[in-house]
Picture 1: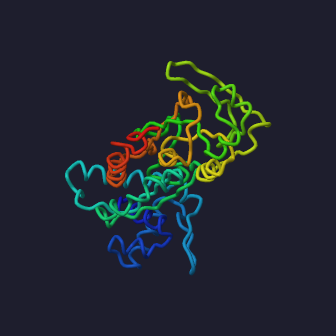
Picture 2: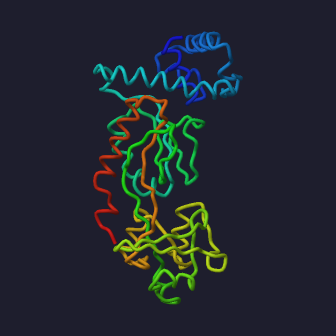
Picture 3: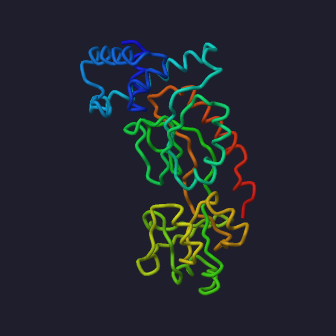
Length: 304
């Protein structure tokens, strides 16, 4: 089994086009087709279903793809360690991130990254739903969560400070809570499950508040909608500082219980499957995000 044939398969799986994958490797369509047939005979299974209209991954292809990516990544990493292949980063990088964070901080700086690496193709999946990295064949992901999965490796991009806030309109109509107990008399807007809200004061004192169905009637699974509802005056909500620091600066949102932050063991992590060598394309993109976002986070530079 040759690495070049595996590289062709990975590209064909990304493009769902064997001829296009072959062209990227400088192969004629007939040669690319022959290479794929040779690989499938070596594996003993059809990796791609072909028709006159389209190409699709077979079940065996889906299962084999992460291993093929790993082998290709290892070769790229080995060549980079020997000083080869550093001038050009190419191929496809599959990356997933929470949509709200990506819209605010990643999408605006992508032109700069792509200008430095014009032969690299970024396949972005932006959603507050967390995709499985292995099943989705992702090279890298940004997670706003606790890193618990032992099959994943990662680097911390930044801290995730979460605070309570509300719109000026809501607070004008309903008053400002002065203690965590006062939240019982306010409408709450939740993200995800309405789990107990734990708050910690500057002096280390911790207060816990259990939202009830009476005051928590709005629950979102989309971060942007969650923020829009808070801005519109739906109630008091817990938000990550990175999501609302601009609105706090302009006064469109107001900090609630400013002496408290939410207790959360989460952080912003860049993670990748443990089975993968950190390939050149993953390393350069990770380093770019760490430099442009993690070195001096905008929301930390101007805390509220």
